[in-house]
Length: 283
Image 1 (tube, rainbow, N blue to C red):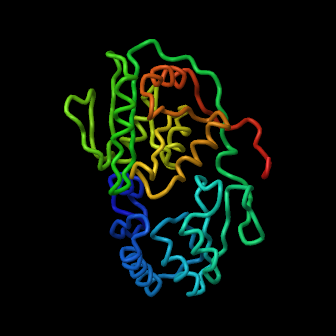
Image 2: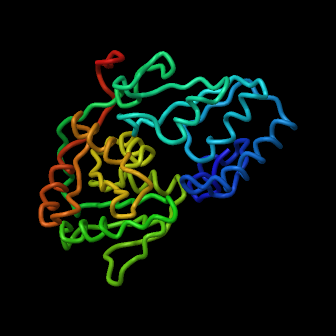
Image 3: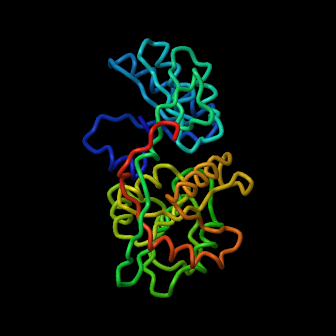
């Protein structure tokens, strides 16, 4: 059960799915509407388990499923390194919901830590291809948050010969934007653009980062900030800091765009691969 977008339609083609109307972060009215969809599913089908990473959809729906007797699990986002999200705090007190964290820093008897998906990756040197550089800029699809600062930071770092693809979400395309721009891409399109790109510039969203890793890309993170009305809170900052510490990403400088040409050059010379030696939980 998820939102109806170009990516989810293509990714879930041929699979059983239920689409619910979009739920913006902390929109309790829309979350309640989503919970009604869950209630209808529970009346018509049988489930062995319910698993969610949030956010707003899970707030009311997951406790409802748990109270119906279905074993229910909430895995907090890997972006939450300092503590649970608002949805996580709700799950913490929800009856019969088992909660897991991907950060050992705040693990407890109530928040079990059994590792993080980041343990499966490591970076290595990479030789750039001898051709015009392909650059993918993906700003995500979260509404209603625009991200104009990212576009302003990318433009000075581009080479005249770069072949640029923009996925802008709700951020307006400014006049004269080089390359091809669209609001959204189907999953196969996005995956193909990541595969072909020499540099992937992404908002610090977990899904976008993991897609970059699947194709061996060392992403450049454009980190959204609540202080600039680009997201609901600063959790992308937490994820960016963790990835940079692990040498799994570089960061776009949103305050001094003149530094970003060097950042893109470095990212083109790095890659990411599955870790040869897995970290043990807590390491």
